Image (cartoon, rainbow, N blue to C red; front, side, top):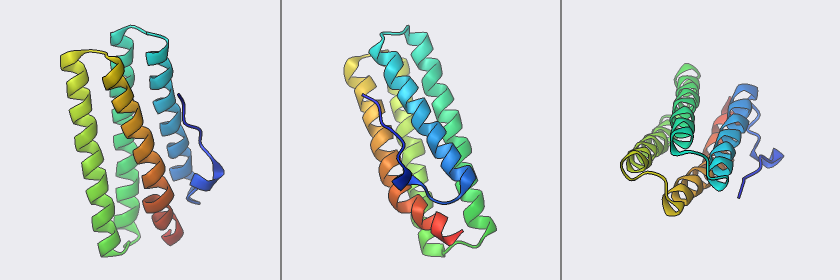
Length: 132
């Protein structure tokens, strides 16, 4: 199961939109690798790569919020969501490294990332994009 980028997820800031598209691509690469029963080490590397890219993207958004004096309450909520995502990704990655690949865990990782991306981009990031 893959998730497709759609134009209604566009936030209007080219670099953010490009990074969002890349995040969708990486989540889909993870899902495809799991579906094709790729070796665990390959899937593990995809998780680490996705986590690193996600951190790069979240840092960009956080820089924009600071640089352009984004609303304090909106910034607080946005940063809270970023922190929660970072914590959840670290937890899921740790679980994967301890237990290895399983259909349930792989589905949990994919579902969590896709749901978070769609919800976060369509609501929280759009608000930031409108401000910028």
